[in-house]
Image (cartoon, rainbow, N blue to C red; front, side, top):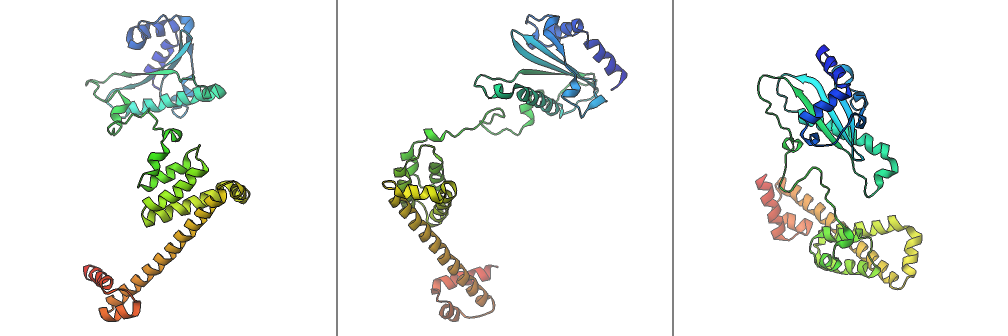
Length: 297
């Protein structure tokens, strides 16, 4: 920290001077009723210990009508425009919020809990006008509808089961399984409708997931209880049958892929279509398709 920074930082430790400063130069606090009793100096190294003596920062907590506002002033005098400044100050803001949230403990889980306002201030003494962004959003590659402070929430309970069951997209059947209020009848419908709506590949992946999920989450004991419930035996029967069918299809597909790989190798080594057809049992049009692949490569 330079001598100039130390001098300014020392001056701002005087609450009267700091009060004059925020009333005149910080627009958000101009018309607020603040007195010196509302100000509390905080050691800025509690927020930026990694900067230690590199910067002469000023950090105050300002109490306004039972609400706390933090004012963080960076006195690391900048003489040239630095385009990452708003990113750095945003990191400081998040550190302050993180500490406040941790201090709140269980209160932080309360419905009405809110993080405090943090006002970041920078002293700039360069010759050219400051042209770097002042808004954090300007340093984010924003897509349409994106808000960095907004959470995307998928409220599973509010998603209509009937609409999901009509879907031909595999993801909707996975979503259905996550619904907290799913009933035995719905599981049965998922198995029946999914087999009808999904492609063979999607259905195989879905059933494998569903079957393993049931066994993993419920365990053998719970599965037996499900079997004992009215309709439960039918559900588990459907599920197990679908799983083994999908597994068998997977084996069959694996064998088929292996035969095609063998045919490809034969053709690459100059064997005729007729001979490959006879040895592998593949249909002629399939062997011709594989030959096209050989010629293409």
